[in-house]
Image 1 (cartoon, rainbow, N blue to C red):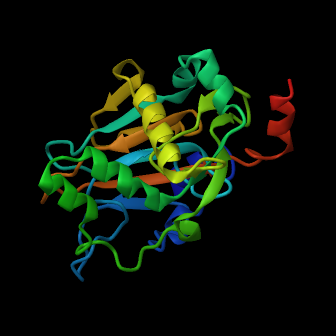
Image 2: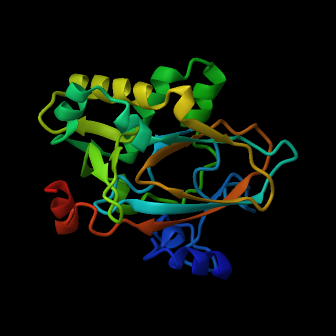
Length: 255
């Protein structure tokens, strides 16, 4: 844990992931994403079961994540569910010019709870739907930082170090400023469908000890459904995108 945390701190300030989610580890910055059951019959981590939607880490907070480190600590023989990553820089660049103009000044409201409506719409298998909403084994001590949001961010995000533009949409979008709820949801669905075209997706099949470090300003990622009865434990840390909505971004936008 301490080695992983030191590596994360080399990139910048780090969220206290474990303690902020109510699932503290020996190092408070390490967040355990696990479906392993403790002596009380509940998962020892958070987010271990069910599908995880297309998202960017911590976008439901005023300061979202910049980089994320994700390590495979315990995997079943099958390797467990894959994780998919989508290039949102390429998604932005592939949009039609009039759509880019439409989005430039729009801001979306992000909430961790919003993902349920997206998952319900695209999950057709009844057993998958049950797994999405199943709560009987979830860690009762776990909670979402900041209550799961909401927070508002530009729909076109500039990376705080490079200034490169990314389409900043995910299944955490609960609304868009200046739009009614139905139109906002439809626009988010259409933009995600555009973004997640096969040519912009990388699938990672996990092996024990794998450690991925990824730009979570310029990507969205999701996870498949875990197979029932297979233990999977990941360790995650995220750096903070300080200044992402502050003066330095305004200066970049003015160029």
